[in-house]
Image 1 (tube, each protein chain N blue to C red):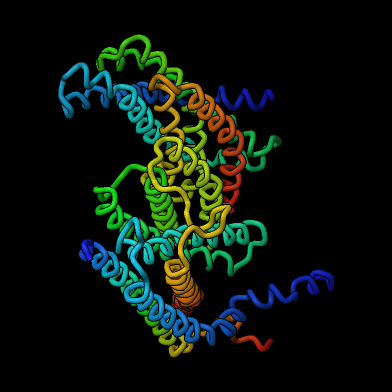
Image 2: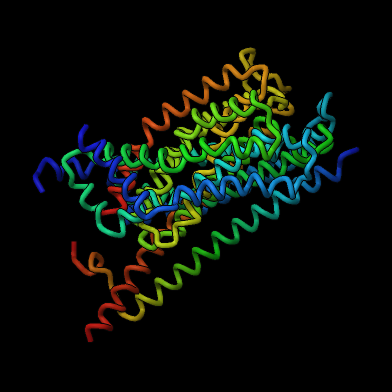
Length: 255
Length: 53
Length: 217
């Protein structure tokens, strides 16, 4: 290795993202993140149940929104995390990137399933049906299927290093394809109400509804970050354990 | 409170699934840590850990 | 370019020599058309209304069925290893194999659509609309299929996982494909379908070649 390459290798980012380094700096983060998330959940739940008014249109069904929107947001945010990790795997071949991608997939699938579940419960009283084949619900369902396919692909490989790069390709193709799916499904059927949080004229919601929504969204996002860090650590440990047991098997064979 | 049932079910479902997810992640972490500890206790070391760096 | 056409010819020859594969696929395609009336009843009006969708689903399933052999045989006999070190880039080889695969799996289906049209009581208008939309849409299906086959080529038990990965990605193709058939606003749907086919069949060989390289490492 030349001096130049060595200098390049030890910039702050690679030092921070080296698996061993990651294990040591992420360890003290887990508990504060978990506590903060739990605290925000407590505040958010209290606000959404007791301290927020009924919407003049939807009545108290607006309370379902406080768990529906954060999950819907996470279902896309987690895919974004996976797409960035996939880039990290393919372009920089970063060992932490594939750990991040693998750890994110099941979490994203759960949040997407929750978005669909709460959406169905929201739809029943307001639209009169649990399931409607409208644009957003359908594309969220397709997103869930993509998540499940990616998880299945991860599980199908024995060699996790090779799996990482192949899954990264699929993840990126999915990331490019998701807007197309969204557009096609919208074209196919549009019934869902248009976006109403951030419009050109600013939030169209009263502050009393926006506040619990934002707090719940932050709480869910922190929950995801906590779980993501813990599962990344688990994944690194799992790989170490697998290396060790392979070594053990090798040395047992040699003796 | 005309739709209390739906709201309750929504929060309940989310709570149950999130709790299951948290428990699974915690259980998985604990299980893998225990496995690693058992392997290390048998005196197997990673090559990179054995080397003084 | 000579190598490119030679590759297509090789794949066609290999498949024709083994024989019957294309025919089996057509048989499967027609069988779905035969099965459906048993499931939804022989009412001609209803059949005619559902026919374009049924034909599309039948084509969809038949293409998924034939995916596995796109790279599997080459992986088994080592040709894939040779391809990776060939004089022409792997991307071009994948593109050639994809075209050959389209000729072997999609074209026979297109030829067989009249049989389904008669069985499902389609009129001439909706038959040629369906065939035209299949003609425009199948390149995208084959290209996605090539990607799925490349991704799962190193898996011994990858037969089921490729369709599961590809199906959600193919949703737009299905939407615009069927949208192009139903009268009225079929113009934009046809254009979108053609656009998707062009874009996907341009980029899929690169992604598939990348996956093949990774799988071979």
